[in-house]
Length: 258
Image 1: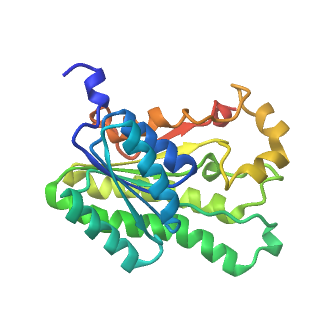
Image 2: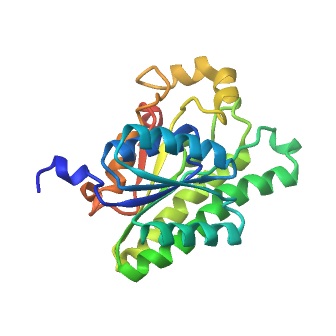
């Protein structure tokens, strides 16, 4: 097998949570470009997932399925996995991308805001991994990619008043490493991507508040663009990463190197 063949996703089936916009849609595009056979896109906004799926089907030789799913709801998650297996036979790749944030100083953050962020970002990642993992364990192969953030590495600048989000992404990193250890025996690779600042609906307001500081603290002197995450996601989903597990792949323009 040639080196470029290692990155092909031919014949594979992937679930991408939060696949209707932002980084999830970008990853879906990358998977389609890499030749994936089947893409399941899910979020609470199923219409957005349908729109992304139709666009990909029009451009690439890929089948898509859009499913409404709240990743904190165990019945929704079970239904998603059931529909995927019924439609496409299996799940080869899971991307846990659904996420939430809340901006408020620590002393003013409502408990319900903290709970919402932790439930979606951490509990949702757990539930999706658990239910999809049962399919992967049975066939003894799979790839799980969790979307973390450079905010999870430690303290953040003062303008980034998102302690719930930051804490949740640190938890996702630890979850990734521990699950990689526990499920290595089943030939399941578990890794995470820690993006820097990418313009998305969730991050745009924060970026506008701190744009100058963000650019100044990024060695490549720019934000992430619509193609910067695709390669990392395809790498971790493909055979090219078969001996990579428990890793946090940072895609941040060098910001975390400072």
